[in-house]
Structures are given as structure tokens and as C-alpha cells.
Image (cartoon, rainbow, N blue to C red; front, side, top):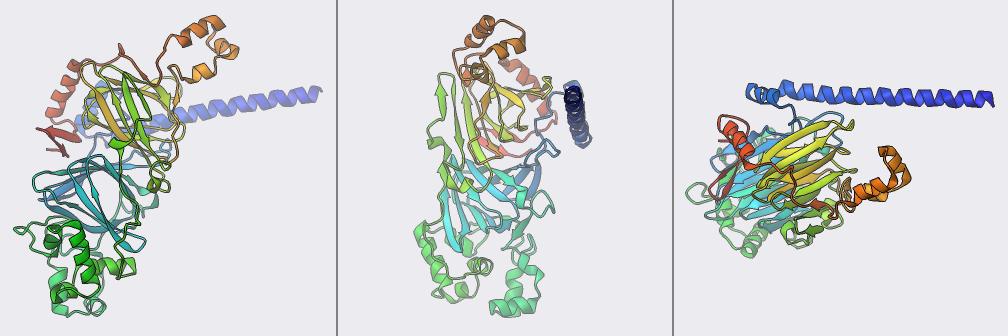
Length: 489
């Protein structure tokens, strides 16, 4: 009996030691992550961070990865480190009216969200060429390795797309790697790596014709498709109605087009890479999904929230990524909660507010005032809340690192964990009587989104931050009139 007690005591001591050690290592890891971020900061950011060390979970750096006269793609890189369960980059694509993001495939999967404008997205799906027309609020998934293009057919409106970039299948050559099918001297097509004789034989064209095609494109990965900029087959196709355009493409593939079109086209390159040049233009591929048309998962007088996962939109099922959209009325609060299944990446679409995030040890990790265009992230298991400013609604959109139902656990409110754990043990944990604990828990009658909070930031505090931004601080998206312009000045 004495040996059994001794063994039990020894086991308890060892467990305590492991717990203390892991806690110490955890704190050490938070410190290392913070030091790494500080090393990457520009001098202006470092000065701002020295004034307030509570914005670690804001991601202010946006870098251009593709820029032309016809458009731009910018990137916010995912944070690294052990506390990130799954890296997820955020991209911002801006395209001028009547422009084309030329055919390519990536080593990473994409989820597109159309913020403003309209788009036509064409891609290869199960060896078939399909095209979808996207409008504001539409979501669309493009798997890694699937060849695609994006066309802005509008005549007077820029196209703005926010996208997630999942590098879980990437080659780790860079943040993500584009493989351009079309191209010339800029960008260079992947075909350019093959010898001229090889390509001449493969395409059954002369070397002179091959040279003309392979060096004709110099405008970059995003090009104009108007007659004045690019009098090409893409210009002609983009000006046709959708059904006429698909019929014309099908004619070209089946050898019924004019001699020049038959001899060469982007679609022939598509066929080379899809393994099947003769494709059926059917509707078997998944359609887009409009998040604004989905009924709110939760709604009360103080705001609403929507989540789109694999059970709602099937293409997300195998992507491992979900999408959410939250709208808070002025002064309201998304109650403190935890995401037990996913890391959350978000961007403020409208309004101003405040985000608070807490470390596992119960200390404040971040208390940041945010505005339109700010990008933030919340690690899995970390408790956090969002609070709208007192003068306007607060809307934010983002991605989660799970395509299953996230099932956030609320720590405060009428549906909180405390209600579930309203037991003598909970009262003992707080060192109060059961009656006092019960009254404390039941004081809040609302759930999920709570009414006007005294913690809501006044607009004056955000004006100071705007002034800093005008002096050269980081910006991800700036507002220009009624347009959302992605990128920096």
C-alpha cells in the first residue's frame, strides 16, 4: 500500500513538472515569435510597435507580387511559427476594366471572394473547360494545379478580389508559385523551357511561327483585352456573349475554326496541359456561391454572422478552408469566444472597431483599433472578441483553416460555456458561492453578439491612427471615392 501511494505521489510530481515545463516552453515560444516579427519590421513599424506592443496579430505588410498597367496582385503573407496550425496567405487582386489575368496554374489552392465588380473565371475541371460568371459576394474555389484565367469584362468598373492562398500543397519555392501557360518575354510561359524543335513538332507549326507566338507577349501577367491594347484572339473572345464564346472555342478545338485560329490558340495550350484537347463545355463543374444570399447563422438586434463551410458549399469540403462574414451594429460586441478547430484570418471590409486577443496564460496579447483594410489573424484556441466603434457598423470577412463546422465556444453570454458548467465546481473555481456565481452568469441575457459596449472605441482614437498612416505607415487597402482600391499608393 505504501509503495502504491509513493508511486502515485511520484506520478503527480512528474505530471506537475511536465505541465510547468510545457507552460514555460509555451511562453518562450510566444516570446520567440514576437522577436522574429520585430526583426522583420521596417523602422517606421518598429517605432510604432515600441509605443504599443499590442498589435502582434495585425498583418500590415502587403507586398506586390504582380503589377502591370492592367492590374495588380498584392500579398499578405501568413505568419509562421509553431502556433500557426495551418499557414494561409491573403491575396488582393485589382483588375482594370476589360483586362485579363492570363492562363496559369498554381502550386496552391485559391478561394476567390469578389468584393467589387464582376468577373468571368475559366478553369479546367475534370479535363473540361468551364467558365463561371462571378458577381459581388460570390465565392469560388480553384484547386492547386488547375489551369485558370480571370477576366474583367466590365467597361467602366475595376474588379477587386480578396482571395485565400493555401500553400499546403506547394513546392515551398516561394509564398506560392505561378506556372504561366500563356506568356512571352514577360511573363515567360512554362513552354519556353522546351527546345524550339520540340515545340515546333508538338504544335505542328513552323519555327518562325513559333518564335512569333512565344515572344509576342510583353505586357505582364495581367493584360488589357481591348482592341487598342491587345488586338488578339482574347480580345475577340472577350467581346462575345458567353454561349457564343464557348461555341467559338469549341469550334477552334474541333478544327472548325479559321486557319489562323486553328493553327494556334491559348485553348490549344490548355488542351496540352489538361491531357485532353477535345473537351465538352458542360455544367458539371461546381458553381459559385454567394455569401450575401445566405441566411445568417445567427442574427439579433446587434448584428449577424454567416459561415460557409464544406457542408454548405461542397468545393470547400476538400479544401480545408472555410469562410465567414460578420456585421456588428455601432457599439456592439462579438462576445469573447474561442475557435477550437481553426485559426482565423480576417480583413475589415467596412467601419472601425477594436480587436482584443488573449494569451493562454490569461494576459492580453493584443488590443488594437482597426479600420477598413486592416488584416488580422487569431490563432486556434486563443480567446478573442471584436467590438464595433460607437458611430458606425463594423463588418469583417475572412477565412478559417477548417472546412468543417467551426463551432466557436463562447465564454460570455446566454449560450456561454459558463452556463453549461454552472455547477458547484465552477463556483469553487472562482472562489464564490453558487448563488453569487449564478447571478453573475445570468446577468447577460443576450448571446453571441452583445449590445452596446463601454469598451467600444471612439472615433477620435482612430483618427490618430489614420494620421500616422498618411505619414507613411502601413496600409493594405485604401478607399478612393466609392471604390475599394487594393494596395498602396
